[in-house]
Length: 89
Image 1 (cartoon, rainbow, N blue to C red):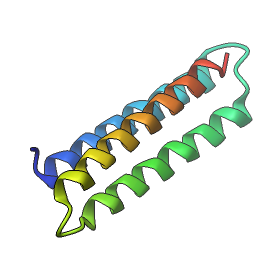
Image 2 (cartoon, one colour):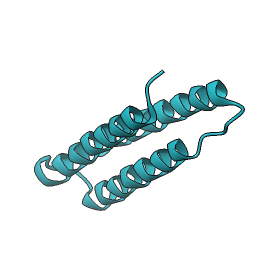
Image 3 (cartoon, rainbow, N blue to C red):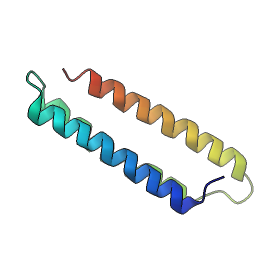
Image 4 (tube, rainbow, N blue to C red):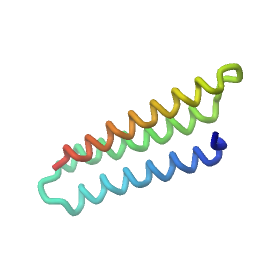
């Protein structure tokens, strides 16, 4: 299992990449709804904050279940944001 420090770095990296992709779509892809792109960038930042704070408060007795649920929720959130980025055009 990775350390919390490495997981936080991974969440920050993924959020940064998703934010950059939204910004590139907003600025350089013609036909992109800029208001939706701005909302999506705000969602990425909220997702980053939520998962960093969740990682900082692990439950002492249920560590394996916590990390399993954490990874499932993170992957689902990333997939939802990627789908929304694809729908911007």
